[in-house]
Amino acid sequence: MEGICLVSERFHGSVINYPYSNDCFVKLEKSEFEEVGILVGRIVALVCCLLCAFPFFVISVYNKDSSEPINFWSGDTSLKDKVKDVKGYNTEIAGLYKKCALFFLLTGILFVVFPIAGIGLLVFDCSVGIYLAYRFYKGILKRYS
Image 1 (cartoon, rainbow, N blue to C red):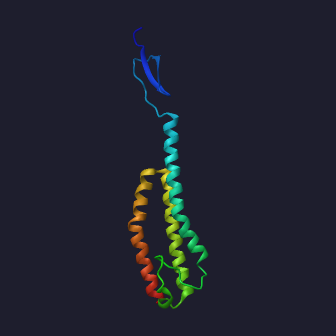
Image 2 (cartoon, one colour):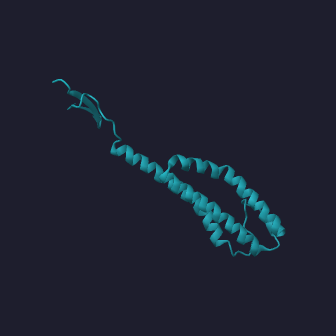
């Protein structure tokens, strides 16, 4: 039986041997379980990014027409004294929050399509993106103070 090899596979803890021809070369392919696992990881990353985007979007939609200034950092009570035009300030801060939500949404979509690029954009969103959002916030606060 030249050219036939026995190939061993593990299936639920037991080893199965079966003959395989083609000069004893076994082509390794991804199993269905590996493909499902990769897809599940991408979906989990998408859900995480959506969970990050959701609060930004909710704050921007429901506080846009508020009579009190929208806080950038939680617990900042000094904004009532600083902001002169609350309506204009809230409109710009709501726009900033919508942009943050959009970036997290795009990051989640990118995770599904190109996971490595999604990781890079997520790192950007959570580091440089926070700094940029803070800088834009300071500019908005300066205009409306």
